[in-house]
Image (cartoon, rainbow, N blue to C red; front, side, top):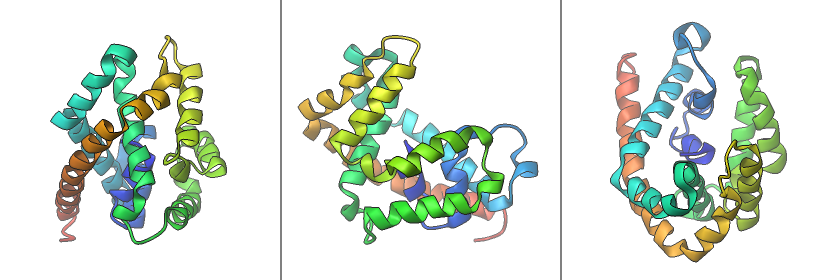
Length: 201
């Protein structure tokens, strides 16, 4: 999953959200680098990614993409799913996507002193271009996919992913809606398990 989903699946726990948000940018001994709840968020991030990679509905979605996009089908699936989460945000939260996105940016910014250096550059663009909201528009994901296609070593064809989404919109929305219910339940239970190691629940 991508940034918006990882934020949402932190269930309004600020330190967990920070860890969940930066999970792809950290390595090494987490316990000596971060406070406990941020470590919990990083661990949750990894559990979410592992669960997503193995889920049969995700594999089905990737199978549709693979003939055209090959190895990049998993990245594209993640972006598609954040598109549907942002686009249909009112189905998952009573807070507007505008307010939620700004609150996330402000929270992450408040923890700047502990943010990984390699996260700071993408975070600047994320905030300036409001990625969390723009994920839910065709213009926004076209811009994101085109940018990623320029940075790949091979001919990824990712700049064509938005058009493919438009052509198969209902199919991928169905994959997302069914999968995301499972992912929410998994993430809630996993977060409870992670907190239990600290005696919090």
